[in-house]
Amino acid sequence: TEALQSFIARKSTGDGYEKYLGLISVIRDDFEVLSQLFVMNNREQLDDTKLVDYMNFKTHFERPLERIVLYIDDLDRCSEEKVVEVLEAVNLLMAFPLFVVVVGVDPRWVTNALKKKHKLHFEHSHHDNTQTVRINATDYLEKIFQVPFQLKKASDEEVKNMLKKLVASM
Image (cartoon, rainbow, N blue to C red):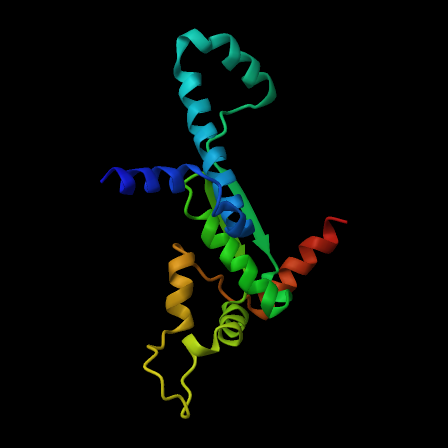
């Protein structure tokens, strides 16, 4: 029992595995610290003994910081590889309540990028003899985007009105 406990203690506190974790793991650890600092900061603001610090904080910010909102637009103008990398990063960010991520994208482009990157998982091959269970790219995206919504397509008349207003404001 002592040998087992000693081994676990040594491995859990050592840095032997850290060099193999990679960038995503390091970023995840930093986001965890950042998230905890936000929570601690908000708690301090409620503590009367920290009122001076809070007033100093308020000189820099109108309202207390509660969330970081990240806007990603034009993802559908990126290469398929970059789209998948960004989706992986968004998935990482969504693990923390600190982050809200808003993504403007054509879902067809994202779906195609996923299919290209993860062919084995998303496509069915007639020559495939493996027992791999196929999933739909849309199901994968539902795990990342919790509140998807689609903008309605503008009619020709709406586009004309918008252009008239833009020209008139110049």
